[in-house]
Picture (tube, rainbow, N blue to C red):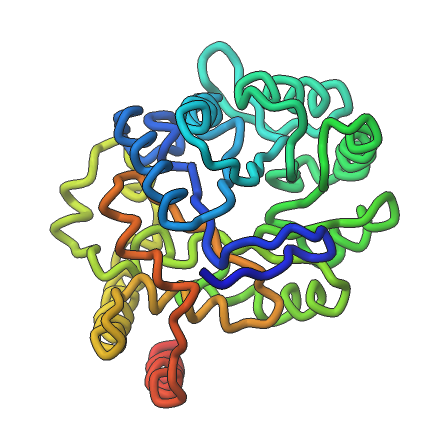
Length: 317
């Protein structure tokens, strides 16, 4: 499987990594019920197929995703890089809020180390710049934790160029995690070029737009999703936006059939064409889903493929 260095870290990542959001199961922004044993088999399948990194977060399932990742790794001979985050905390009622104060960030890192059963986090990322006034305090705390060898590298997620500039004055930013897909390409205008110029690695999330471009989504499947799946509440899964992206997925499916690939693999491969992108985070929650995405990192889209995609985007902007 092809690999690329994440920023200037020296970590050579497979072009896709396993995203563990859905593995967290039911919570305020979950994907519905998830069987832990199925999650563990999914992680094992991904590792056996060559994927060498996992991205999770404390808030996914309110700590549960990290715990499941730890269980899976205890039962595996593979030792992938494990990336997590900080900055979103919850109370006893499960209400999530953004906190970037020093004491909170330190506690989150310690809790993640405990849940993941690790001595050091390979990458810890500020999940959201919220509250924005505290991003420097959070980044200073992560830099101190890096000095204490509890974190190898520091990254951020969902930051703007101006926010990146602010925290880069404190310590190097290894990576940025932004949303980037054919459905939501906006970060390609300013943020990705800036990161490429500055040597900041990109691990983009939702390259299939949370399933919209997987080739398996339909109005019927959407209606049948569990009632606590966050996508029911998203405007991107309603009305004209839904119609547009399902039509795009149909096109990606036709292109994929020419390469023996899925629509989702075409969607992921398109994001990997951007020279700023080191690797893409791909959510997987069942072992059989691995086969539908694993070839994305090796897929080479032709000029005619890209022209067809470009024509669709121009006509449906």
